[in-house]
Length: 446
Image 1 (cartoon, rainbow, N blue to C red):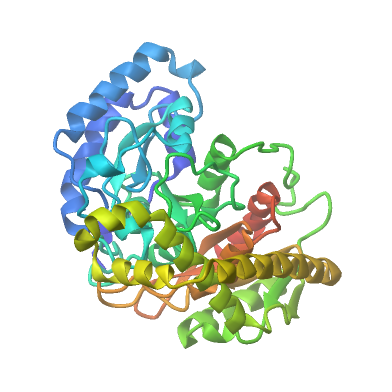
Image 2: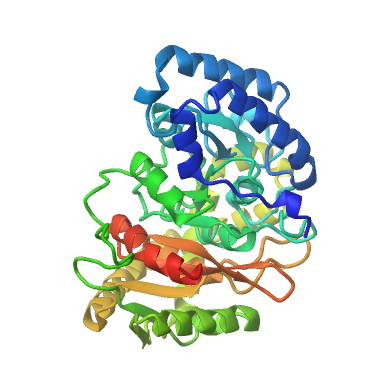
């Protein structure tokens, strides 16, 4: 590993420094652009942008005109963020990781970008995505091992945070496109409850699943950003801020492990690390309960793919009819597959999803489980750049629309990151972040 490529930065510290005026936003942008020029040619996290420095300095001048006093500035004053290149940003073209003419894909600025800019953030640039947030990989390399995939489809966003190019980046997850690359790149990836961050202004993949998420170096960064981006955030929800460092007013969380065919999909390195993590959490006094939650996992996979392929074909019906020869083979195959799906089968799959959500919630409640735990991915980032790895460990939770996050959770013997996936209850994103804080402390040895 080239350690100079891995230098994640704390969003909390960076935001506090900028609000204190040290450095000034203009100096900060100069340093940011120098870091991108130095590192990005090695990992390709950002879509190339001629004139990036000039554009960012213009954003700084506009910010200073609106907010001349940093002490009165909003939470993300001067913080530069990366935006996945399926998310519309005023002033920057949207390519979607494709060869389609960018004007074809143009649209109004996304709501998530509106919220970032209202919070004082600057847009460092567009981050590389797999083509249309599918399975055809982008150019991005893993900062920990450039010959390994960073995951997908939010590859550039995860790599940009891991490499310290930005402290915050926006991604999207249809099945596993935030949690998996976060694990592969050794950062935090947070996928809120389906619909909690509006998808307006985001190119669709499968609208029944598509969810806007984010990447930060640590959980504190996610906890800073999430209330600014999610609808109706309840800042009062969460742990007590007392002396015990992990004491909750309603008791420590009970952890559930979904054993069976789902967990069997994890490879040996992921399972061994997961077993160690569970043992460590149990040794610190947390209750771990093993549950048979997903006995019909193969059927769940089939139903999820039915919805995904049908909706991807529908989302691209117009573009593919006009520009099908410009699509990459993997994306074109998915769209052609989706065209063969009967609308009645998609409707049945959505009914299956409703029943699955209800059954899962009932079983969790009966077992008294607060958080579900699983490996974030089937193993460490695979070698090679022809695939973004398997999303299967995220599939049931994305299918159900549950909030989930990936916490950095150690490394393999040869230094590749691993992640622990933490899954909350629908709509309880605040509680997920709050309860996950103790897990982060335990995993960090605190």
